[in-house]
Image 1 (cartoon, one colour):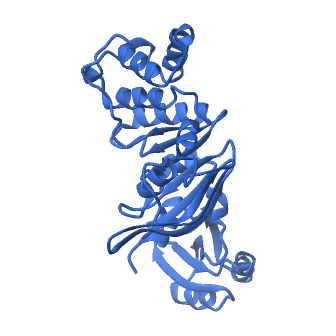
Image 2 (cartoon, rainbow, N blue to C red; image 1 turned 180 degrees about the vertical axis):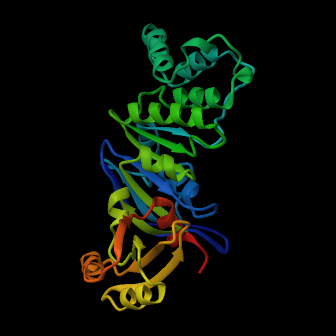
Image 3 (tube, rainbow, N blue to C red; image 1 turned 135 degrees about the vertical axis):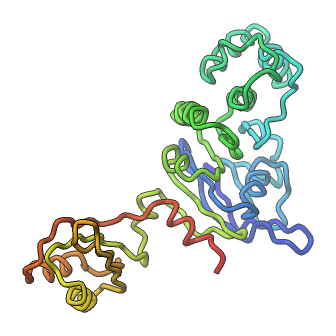
Length: 311
């Protein structure tokens, strides 16, 4: 549905986005992750035709941002990080104002506003001034604003920024509900939210894409080390370290004594080799008691840090 190719954006000597390319499929919820200054917001602003790229192209269906920017904007709803709301207006009056601007037919306007209010959880605050609402409810008003023209594509820039945990869960549920019918692109700093909400994740760092895939595919990416956590009883520390370090595929061994007098062992292993079976066979050939043997899966946080931390 959306094809982005060799997209770049320069601000004088700063290259905010550096020749990124990826596709976004229809009906997908795509999360754009990255540290501050990585180029996420710049990418979204180019995608929504608020910024012109320095080079590269974006195609939405059969439209290009170079020739069809107004038509593309009509396909999209955009919620920036700080929702641009008229805070002295009542929620209903504001949404009616937006409906008028967006060309919603007068006969259908009331029904459409009611449907959006129900979808975004605004029914009980429709006659309150926006300025009196919590930040979570203000985000909901901004989301209803972005949805007013029934867009095929919804672009959300940090939709849960500054919200409390309960508000985050509520916004997440709304996004998942909307995602059943629309294509959604969202940026976020909250990794757990990306993991819970998105079908696919693109991680961007210093203007370049450093990872692209589902959470599970990123966790299982080739070249990443795996970690085995093993607890042993009746084992000599020195002997255990020597034996386990000698197993093919084991790259590092860290051993600590636990309060029960046993050994807690953490093994960093080559992900490309069947090291688990070899470690188990090594332990089985001894008189040690094996009380725990767990593969520690990578978290999205670990992957994010590995890909974006300063080298």
